[in-house]
Length: 132
Image (cartoon, rainbow, N blue to C red):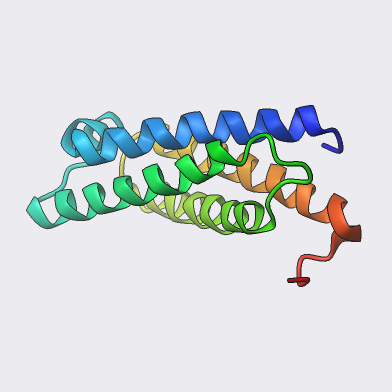
């Protein structure tokens, strides 16, 4: 994933998926969660909306930096963490019997995005993830 075009594709694809999920969670959380085979109460709905708002904000930032080269370090590191943690949480939910097969699909998609960003981070700056 060394080329600017492939990194831009990763940023655009992730921003589109992230904005879609964010809008779904913020506007229609019950429908979004029921698609994954999940049910919730009013507290869960409120937290789903909050997470949706966070996804919208983070992915607007991702979209706005899609043409930056090299890619923005905070965006790349943020997506490594966000997508990696999303993969772990979704996989844990699926392993405990929550939701349907789409929960596992979400885990796999998030893991792929996280690995994509990890590849970007390792290839830039000689792999210095700890650099500021």
